[in-house]
Length: 271
Image 1 (cartoon, rainbow, N blue to C red):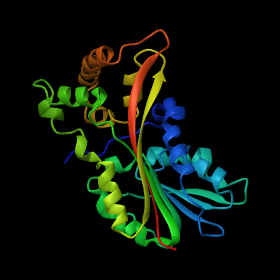
Image 2: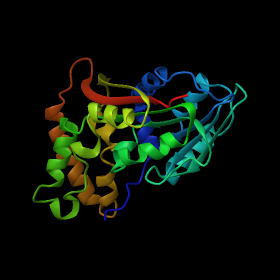
Image 3: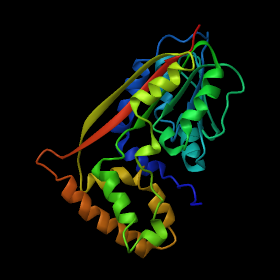
């Protein structure tokens, strides 16, 4: 079994504005929460920058961000933990979405661009919805771009003759997430009122090799982790991948257009 990818909060946050946009769109569709004050969990909180946005929507809430990356949690603690301006509290704790179950009723369980890293994550939905207070909400968004050139080219290179012995089968495929209709069916069958949709953002990235810079913070992490003990090999892989990305995502005079499909779901438990 390959090692879990290591994470670099600074690299991830280089595109923080674009990465936060889907979360803001997700939160805007979450209905009123039943708790006074609400109890909220963020699964896969990363460096905590979007977790902190929950306190803007629910100022009095007790919000806990969970992640299994010590690097991400350290950054979240330093930058965001503590009392919130509205009288709530924001804290962070180690938690793995493969096994985490709420120890008390929650008004909101939310997850932002995390569940694609959790094989079989839809099997966890029943446990999480069972952990909601009546009228509570489970909401998430995941990338739906595993068929995009950024991922296809990465997989093809990893499975090529030069790299397959070290990287073959390491990267995720289309089955990392379900189709929107499958999420709708899963959540509705659990007795929830469900809102599912998809959006393709057309991010305009700037700088040199911006698509490579983007994936270094997310999708490329398994490769960077696997080759961390061999810097020359890591650099050779990046060079080959960079060349392919430049052809697939040509720069324009305004920047580099980067289409990015996202899948969203908001499921409200019966009150």
